[in-house]
Image 1 (tube, rainbow, N blue to C red):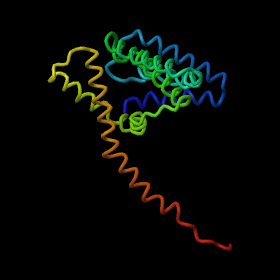
Image 2: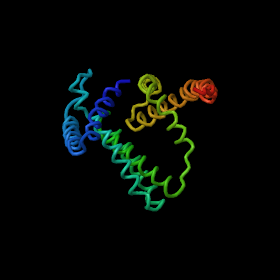
Image 3: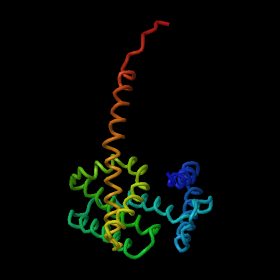
Length: 212
């Protein structure tokens, strides 16, 4: 759950926009600038307050915000254009995987393009992607399991003799997503169903009427 530290920083700084819009925008812009500067420095081996506050990973928050606004603007484009845009996002991911370090914000850029184009397609053209819905539902399980599953996947690549950066990226991503989805299907979803079954009768039970 190491990314939780970055999320807490984001929530704290984003809350300044709620308190004061102009001041919050300045603070967020300053934070983005320092995080972009950090892209040029080696990734630290251990987390420190400075490495969390000013980390390339923080750029991904802004890419996610950008994907939201991008999806709204793309809703009026044709399906072939959106499909081409998704292909561009996937191509970006593979190019980054073959040429840069793992903490590069360019990964977030590729994923943002794919998500924005897919969301616009769904809104405008009725795209249905059941596998995507399943992965979305399993996002919390993916978040909790991705690090140990990826470690296991990297060990498998040595045993399988996978050396190509592109093959490594595709294999590790597939294993990590599959592991998270399995955790969701086997553990999270049954637990949620059990909790709902126990909570629903309590919530639905009428309170005794009191005449006062």
